[in-house]
Length: 209
Image (cartoon, rainbow, N blue to C red):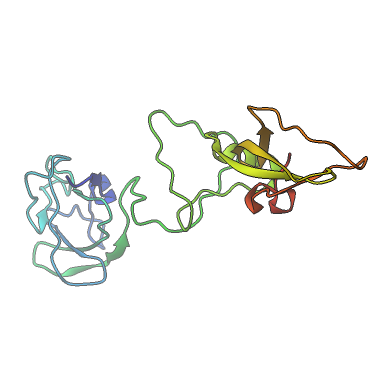
């Protein structure tokens, strides 16, 4: 089902001529942005009943109980004419975005302060649509659901090859490693390290252990 959004064309309060005369019978033609192809708009968010095109102003130069709704992602162009179809100076406005419609927005939104969202938020998957946090604090707060898994770790500084299953939980840039069973062996040095750690869990990948 298409998502309905309101066009700011709905917010036209009153139309006047170039001489300041109330625009009785003036007309608003609506086209697809950048074209002369008529674009269907609707009277409500149900998208069930189409507006006339043009929409004709009343004797007071106002819409007569008319609202302009369209589908999300539809960019509009309007042309305002008088009752005789003469285009009013400045009455052609192209590339009109819809109110609150971010469906076709591909830029960057910068928020300073606190963003409070009432309801559900769907975030993009990894890749081109991912949300990225910059800095250790932001990166750790982007995804609050930890990635978990296991790998086989090999201990160095031992008299014999010593391996074990290592569990990990990664949340943002914070990694927790733990074992569910003891890894035993005999050391032959005062230093011990572990190899086999996946690259995405290593400190060099921006991880804080």
